[in-house]
Amino acid sequence: MTDTDQLHRFIFDNSDVRGEIISLSHSYRSVLDNGNYPDPINDLLGELLAAAGLLSATMKFDGILTLQARGDGDLSLLMADCTRHDSLRGIARLVDGARPDTRDLRQLLGHGHLAITIDPAEGERYQGIVPLEQDSLNRCLEDYFNLSEQLPTRLWLFADGQRAGGLLLQALPTKLQSQEARDNYFEHLCILADTLTGDEMLALDNTEILTRLFHQESVRLFEPRALRFACSCSESRTGDMLLSLGQKEVDAIIAERGSVEVQCQFCHQLYHFDEARIAALFAPRRTLH
Image 1 (tube, rainbow, N blue to C red):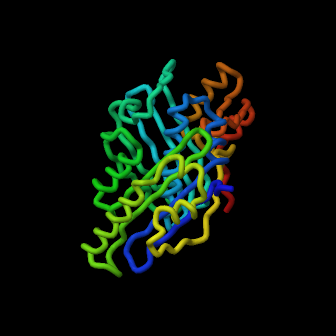
Image 2 (image 1 turned 90 degrees about the horizontal axis):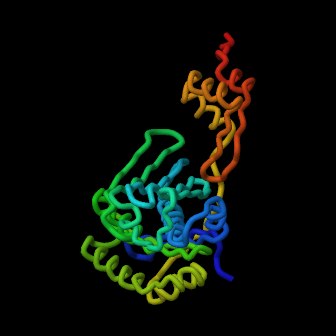
Image 3 (image 1 turned 120 degrees about the vertical axis):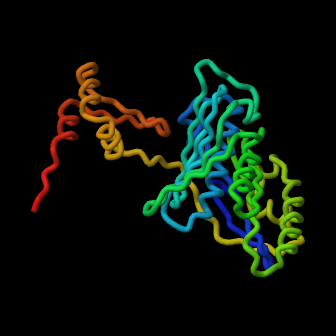
C-alpha cells in the first residue's frame, strides 16, 4: 500500500544537502472534483499541488505559500497554495472553448510569469516572480531558485489525474562540507534522482523510492506530515470582500438581483447575502468605551 497525502523530509548524513518527497492522492482528486479540466491540465495541476506542498515545508512560520502561473495562452491561470497546517487547494482557468492536448507549459500559458508568494500570518508578504521560459513546471521553478540566487535546488514532479508526487533536493549553506565537496555531492545526488520515473513516483511508497534512488547513501528520514484538501473561504471572508467592493456597488447588485451570491472558485461553496444582511454588513460599527 503506497503512502497517500504525505510529505517526508530527509537529510543526507555528514553532508550539506537536504530533501523532501511528497505523495498526493485524496487531496489531489478533491481539487480535480471541483473542476472539469482536460487531462493535460489535471496533470499540471497535480504537479503544481505537489510543488506547493514541497516548497511550503520550508516555511518555519504560520502562513500560506502560493504558486501562481499566469499567461496569455489557452491556459490563463494555474494556481495552488499550501498552508503551514498542510492544507492544499488549487485551480486552473482556461479560455472559453479551449481543450488543450499538450502538457507543454510554455505553449499552454503563452507569454506569462510564475509567481511564488509567501503570506505569513504575521509580518510582511513576500513575492518572487520569474518569466515562463521553460516547457515544464519543475524547470520554471528551478529558474526561480537560480535567478533569485537562493540555494541550489532541483525538483522532479509527476501526476496522472489520480496521484501526484514530487521530489526536491536542495544544497544547504556549508557547515559539514567544503563548498566544492557539497556541490559535487549535490550533483551526484541529482544524477541519481534523474533516474526516477513517473511510474515509480506514482506507484511506490516514499520510503521505497528513496531506498531505490539512494541505497548507497546514508539517508535520515523524519516523521511524515499528512496533507489534505481544505479551502480557506468563509462567510466572514466573503463579507470582508463585499465590504472592499463598497456599498454603492453592492447596493447596485441588490437593486438588480435582490440579493448577492458569491461562489468560491476553489470549493464551490455558495454564500448568500440578502438585502437585510447587506444592510447589517455596511451598518456603522459602534465602539464601546
